[in-house]
Amino acid sequence: PAALLLILALAVGLSGFAWFYAAVLSKTTTPGLLNLTRTEAADKAAASGLGVDVIERRYDEVVPAGSVLDTDPGPGQSIDKDGTVGLVLSRGPERYEVPALRGRTEEAARRLLEETNLAVGNSEHRYHGKIERGSVIDTDPAAGTSLKPGTAVVLVISDGKEPVAVPNVVTLPVEEATKALTAADLRANITEKFDETVPAGAVVSQDPANGTADKNSIVELVVSKGPPLVEVPQVVGKNVAEAQQIITDAGFVPAPQQLPGGPGTVLNQDPGGGSKQPKGTTITLYVF
Image (cartoon, rainbow, N blue to C red; front, side, top):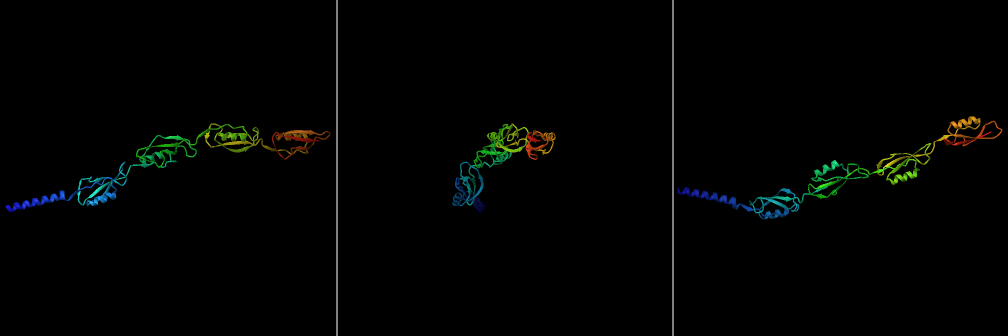
C-alpha cells in the first residue's frame, strides 16, 4: 500500500507539472505591436520568439495605412511561446475619389456615385453650348477629390444650349438683317431667289420666323434677287400693233416711237429682242 501511494503521488505530481508547464511555462505574453509598421511588428514579435500574420485590413481615421491597428491576442495577453500574433493592419482613412462624370447622363452619374460609396446632392442646372440637355457638365467637389463615404456630390446638369429671341428681319436689307441676327447671338445662312414684290437685296423670308432658337444657331434667310428676268421678244419687222401685243403678252410695257410717213413697221427696239429683262420693263419700239 505504501508503494502504491507513492506511485500515485508521483503520478499526480507529474501531471501537475505537465499542466503547469502547458499552462504557464509554455506561454508568454503578446508584445505591444500597435502603431508599428508590419516590418517593425514582425521584428519585435521575433525578438519574443513569435511570428506574425496579417489577418485583416481595416479603415481607420488615425492609424496610418500599413501600421498595426490591433492584434490577436491583444497586447499583454497570453500566447504560446512559438505562437503567431494575428495583425490587423490599417488601410488609413476610408476615402473615395469623385469619378469623372462630365458628359454622362444624370441617371448614369447618380448610379456611378452610389457605386463609389458617395451620395448624390441636389442637382444644379445650367445652359451649355456643347453638352446636351440632361448630361453632366461638372461636379462639386470636382472629379478626383477624395471624400469620406456617404459625402454628397452636387451634379451640374446641362439644360442644353441657351435659347435666345429671334428678331424679325423680313424686308430688311440683307446687311441689316445679318447684323441684327449677330447682335442676337444667332448666325445667318443666306440663299437667294427672284421675287416680284421684294426689292433685290432685301429679305423675303426667314426660318425660324420668330420665337426662340438655340444660342449661336443658324437662321435661314431667303434674299430677293429682284423680279425674275424674262427674254424680250424679237418684234423688229412686225406691224406695230402686233408688236405691241407681243410685248404686252410677255409682261413688258411697249412704248412705240412713230416716225411719220411709214407703213407702221417696227424698225428697231430697245432693249433688243433676246435680251433678258425684269417683267414690267419698258420696251421702246421705233416705228416707221
